Length: 467
Image 1 (cartoon, one colour):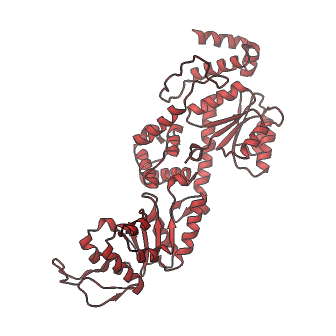
Image 2: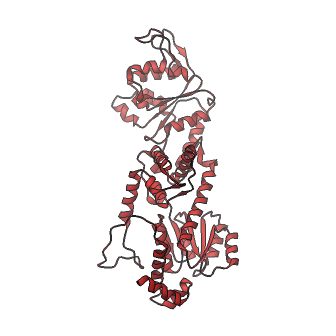
Image 3: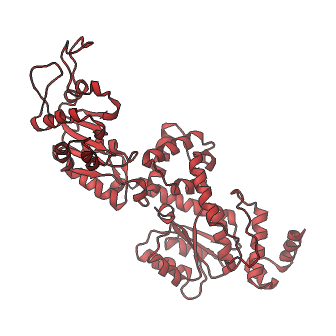
């Protein structure tokens, strides 16, 4: 899964190269990816083929204005989060932008803290909107809006209507038991028991008794008759997780139970009728197990007729964003906590980790982070070390020395990446002034105009920065 699939970039539309670069740099420092273009026309062209999380646009642009860009996007039905900024802001402009659907309106000279706060608010509003959009994104508690998951929900709902056995395939941690429970809830058997059993957890010598029960005296220690899992699931569904771990001799008896709809308890003389729907699951490649004579082909073909594959998290696109926020809400509610903010660096790590353990690993990471969080803020340090390490490796592999042109000058030494931190307001202000001064070719009058301050104030700030 690519980085962009995990966390969509923010689009900055600003014709002033120095200000555009400054905005990108500050948002990058805050943990966001960014794309920058100098005109509304280029923004429209980019949006036609590149998804973004939200857009920040200046009002005054060459050609189409930022207001016209906003209007065109909203008329096309776009729900993209949009912040409008301008050095020439008026109340009328602000009202017009908000009426056209802008999410926020800010004025120059830019208060970078306010910009970061506004970006967070817009993304959080989008997140809340997504978390309440349950019509398509949830299937009996399973979250997924990607085409792969929507197709899975559709097929599972259709198969749930029959009584035929179902085989669920998927890597460890993808949620096979959750899907089995969803199928049971979707079926006409939903009022009867759902009985889950992990075939790998039952000792081989006890499996037959566990599945089919036994009569009193059937073996040493059988002091009384006992029902098996089939009888316990009567009228409902029996979920056989990790069926690939079932001994081959028991597979034959399971196949007979499926075909005859009867079971014989250990030590018993009569077959007992059972009405049970079998849902099996495995992470193993059963065709290879058949080749190695570890799994019966006749049982496989009986189960495989109606099979469902759960895609691993890396194949589910932006589903991970829905899952992250849904799981944060879930575990915050469970622990009686209120998570009001997520550090951008923490969110970036959560959305960009590879998750070899799939949804189970993601949920465990979030449960830990929520448990450790304080003051309503989920911080980067609250995440498991492996997530933080992978995020740090990705960042260090892409770090370069920034210049106004975006190129590293010959002979420039590239410094080692420093630990991420928030710059102080004084540092931001000094950096901003230097960037604008460089962009104007050292023209202090033009620099003061761009910054929206008097030249006398600019001179004083420059003197302070040189001390």
